[in-house]
Length: 251
Image 1 (cartoon, rainbow, N blue to C red):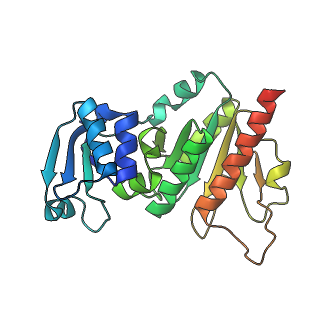
Image 2 (cartoon, one colour; image 1 turned 90 degrees about the horizontal axis):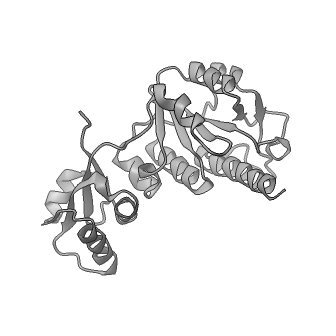
């Protein structure tokens, strides 16, 4: 049985109601709030026949403790993500060169949410995460992702190295981001079937993950800092790949 989840925050809930309202079983809204953004949420809920319950701030605080819910919480079913054994079939049915993001050990939910948001903006087909050594897909991740977690398939895998071998066997080139790599990101061909790999906070890519990459690339840094936050690095890598892929389509 799929477990219930809660999505909170105006942007995340609005995006969910716009893109996948069937997932929402109940919308709970702060009884004292009445402004254009809340009315927009209520209008979307009404069009989708989603039940709405007006509640006190205390009730909302108890539903999602310790977070800024902005007066709105959606009760939902679990997202319909792609399972590990469905991944190969999912890739085969794509009508364009695959574009995947692998996140190896992102443990901060804010970073994970930001990476998923960038993945959606860049047109990534799916995000692959290890089951262990990764932040859970919780309400904080979904809020930071601003609705992207509701539409980008997330694949949680038990053995990342094995899945990377399967991707390579399927003709997908795998490139990892590493600060010490001699090859520059902008000199790397990212235009074909591709999986980009970003490592966790602090330690970066694990040894076994590196060994299963076809190549490593670095982001050139011009200032005094020696590294970037993983969510920033993810955005740079994804949009360089998007730029190259768009240029290839125009030829």
